[in-house]
Image (cartoon, rainbow, N blue to C red):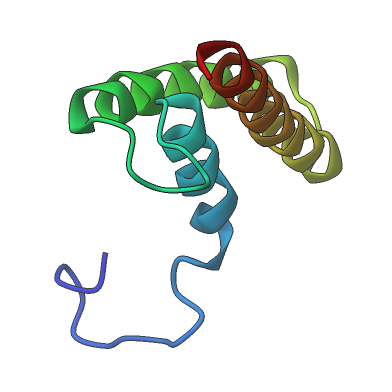
Length: 88
């Protein structure tokens, strides 16, 4: 967005951090490092975009949106931990 306008605010894009983290973790990138693919993150970003469109379509408020993204992050980390323990 900063390339389209002639100014930049330090707070520009603050609302996208939770979306980004949920896309990365949902895409299979491990919190502990050493795992994950760009393809997985790319597919997960489309899934997060679809979830975002659905949330906007049903008219949920910002609190519920952030709660859903937080739950996606927590569930992704829990699943990665469980799968990692089974592999070892």
